[in-house]
Amino acid sequence: MLGRGGSGPHPGLHRPGRGRVDDSPAGRTAIAEAFRIADVRGAALLAVHAYRARLTHRASDEADLLDRLLRPWREKFPEVSVGTLVNAGPAARLLVGVSHQAQLIVAGAHEPGGLPGAVTSQLLHHADCPVLIAR
Image 1 (cartoon, rainbow, N blue to C red):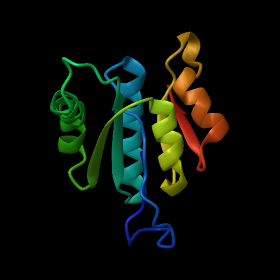
Image 2 (cartoon, rainbow, N blue to C red):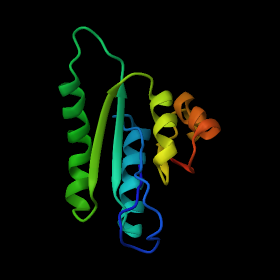
Image 3 (tube, rainbow, N blue to C red):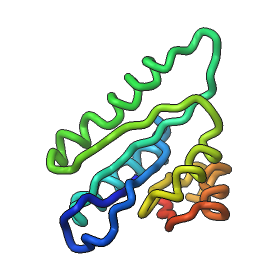
Image 4 (tube, one colour):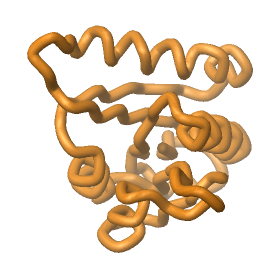
């Protein structure tokens, strides 16, 4: 979930960042770590939330969830620029696809013992940028 702007310690890196956001403990840990890293590096974030589309499900509900999860971190790190992307579909496919333009993906460890879950495992094998597993 980390990207670069035009200034900072590594001005040659201009690829936007991507990452999956969810309301699990692992997801909340990943959000916190992504904000900390972005703050230290002067980088921008793009929080990506994938969900399963259902007839009774609205994209606006998912966008509201993402905004609620990010709100305390935006307040704690007001100088970090944060964009959001909400998309229906498989999280692994979405993140691997957007990893081509990311500098770093911060993902949570969703399995017991801090091991990567299915989405994170796919990222580790197929992402086109480094993946940090926050636990």
